[in-house]
Length: 148
View 1 (cartoon, rainbow, N blue to C red):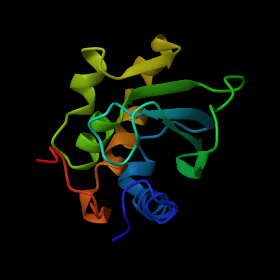
View 2 (view 1 turned 90 degrees about the horizontal axis):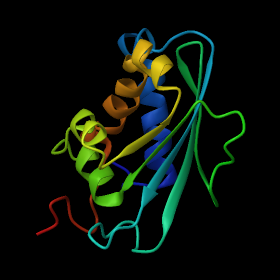
View 3 (view 1 turned 45 degrees about the vertical axis):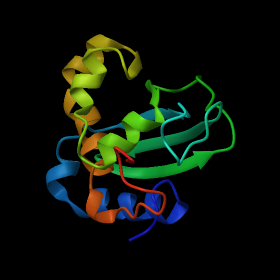
View 4 (view 1 turned 90 degrees about the vertical axis):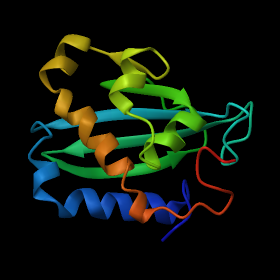
């Protein structure tokens, strides 16, 4: 099991997503480009306060074609969505103790992009979090949420 947020962790999630047809069938055909921003909030030991981890996810015809960390903010041009939230919330989703839909609806996690299109393809966002919440792939070297 790779440590959360490590390159090996994202590689394992990419492999998982692309190995499951039930996941791939939920993603609309075509290309979808999504930026994910995990903001250090002083609670998560994995993303220091005042820092942000930037990720880029690209779906192509139902499969994850790219899933990688960027050294800085992913440029907005060409993106369909940008998902931003506190690291402790992303950690909680990965640990399966936080419902991503709930934190999206209550504004704890923000999603920017064409909301009309998102509503038509809401399963796509659910796919991202379904893969993300595969805690069986995650090692928690600094402690699993709620960290106590």
